[in-house]
Length: 138
Image 1 (cartoon, rainbow, N blue to C red):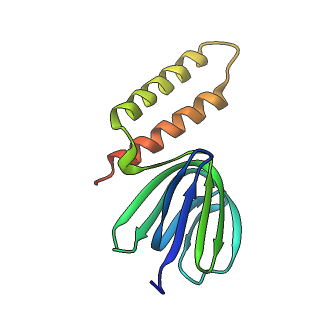
Image 2: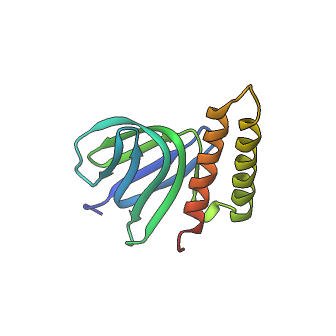
Image 3: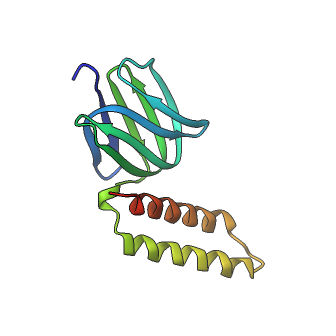
């Protein structure tokens, strides 16, 4: 346990992860970063992407997040995410449907003059990341 760090990933609705980890890798807005036990304290914003961590038993785990904040302390990493899903909780068919809807919405909006590309692109990015995580070898 001395070489592990506590990882907590929390959304406004629930605690998604609360366990020991050997290493945590997260998508910071200034680039991906890794945290081990004993890390120098810091806080940063997170972008949409994947948090990867190796649990205490050595198994690699994946969690999709749609942005948020992270605080690293020498013995704990806390992630406050807008939304988060463990890979095992992602419904592949639902994710595929969301991807198809986002692609269609982007195509439809490209033909209109009142274009909300930012919103359509954000939906597409979320769907693509969820599919990527869901289809990673389990």
